[in-house]
Length: 153
Ligand SMILES: Nc1ncnc2c1ncn2[C@@H]1O[C@H](COP(=O)(O)OP(=O)(O)O)[C@@H](O)[C@H]1O
Ligand SMILES: [Mg+2]
Image (cartoon, rainbow, N blue to C red; front, side, top):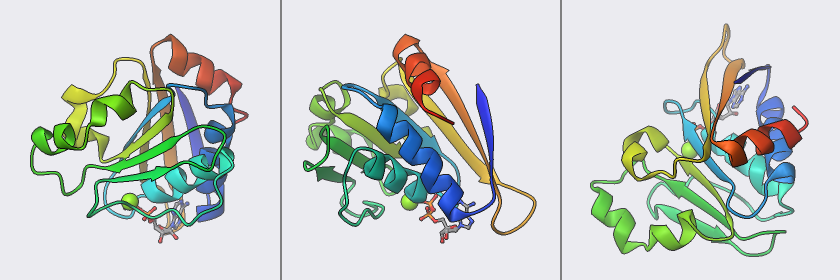
């Protein structure tokens, strides 16, 4: 487990970018935290770390955004408005979750049962003032442990 104190949006994006740079085929990042915690900021960092320059927003209504222009395919999920796990099935989530790309899922706590066992859990919570956050990264499995070790955090 690693805990990071973020003092700004830029800090959080940088942490995400460090993970994105170290990510390999099959890296899975499960983001937990409430509304406005900074999950999308972190996800944007992961995208930048993969070499994706396109705008990255929460796929709140579409559930999934796919980016093909980076070093690896990047699948950005958001489970906030998910009504049932069937909706994820309909999207063909398994091809993304267990494929050669990199996955980030926001509101991962809503679909815990579907997540791969080897993943990096990233929990973001409020800090002592408006712009502070505590980011806790917990590797579940060997691949996630390697990812966390290789990321320069
Ligand atoms: N340290 C910080 N890390 C991340 N976001 C921060 C931080 N401080 C302030 N913010 C603000 O909090 C908001 C986070 O938004 P967002 O990433 O969309 O949240 P979420 O996806 O978790 O709902 C942004 O408006 C951002 O500017
Ligand atoms: Mg979001």
